[in-house]
Image 1 (cartoon, rainbow, N blue to C red):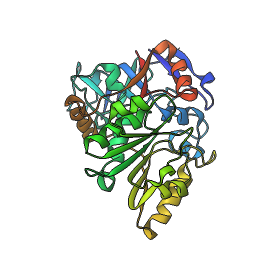
Image 2 (image 1 turned 120 degrees about the vertical axis):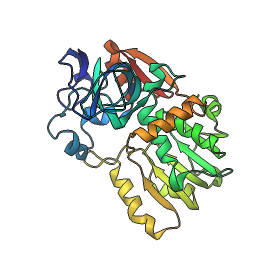
Image 3 (image 1 turned 90 degrees about the horizontal axis):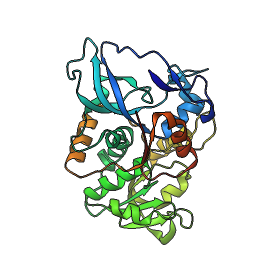
Length: 322
């Protein structure tokens, strides 16, 4: 089969389309014929091997699995001996290690039936980013009607879902995004927009009940000044912070401070689970959320797709079609 392979950590220039053996599913896994795969910042972190702490899980000197990608949508090819919830021919979406390929294995508990009203390309844009937005706005961070919510990185993969979800809960959503995207995020449900090139989140003296930070590059002190005294901050982005710990340092600082404050400072590393995917399926089918696909690339141009994510500012998700 053909796959996008990266043998060593480094830049996107080291990626290549190559013929490799088709993976064989373990007992609890499903082999999926991939029809489309999502591209998100986690691919960049795994590609570069930074922060270095992530290599403890993915391989210290080189990636354990050289095939890139997580998000996928496709058709079940075969199932492992212990899998009972899926059968060959089922249309599914979810997360599988090495999705930028013609076939990928995924644990059965990280898959769900594809939403009936979505194309494979749309469904592939949903798992990681949609689950992150859903989990980020759950529990204490779930906004109540009339509360003020700030979504930082509102035009990106996670942010587009977060704006839609927060608006569906009845919150007043302020979206932080780049120039030329104000009308776009308003169509998703934002009532106010801040252009990060000319405005800061503390401008105007507004205090927000919930802040979901998907960008990960603002100091914790600045985020706290924009947060209401009893507000909840969720840090879902982990950029900056150096090569070793990345954004984890800021998140650990938030955890250390939170017990001594009225504010709740939390971080999120989203886990794609079957139950969350089923919630997203329902939300997509009833029209509460809709995937935003910035652009779709064929598998032969997947390297260009990753470079577009690395250097551009896509609206929503980038998708690779197989």
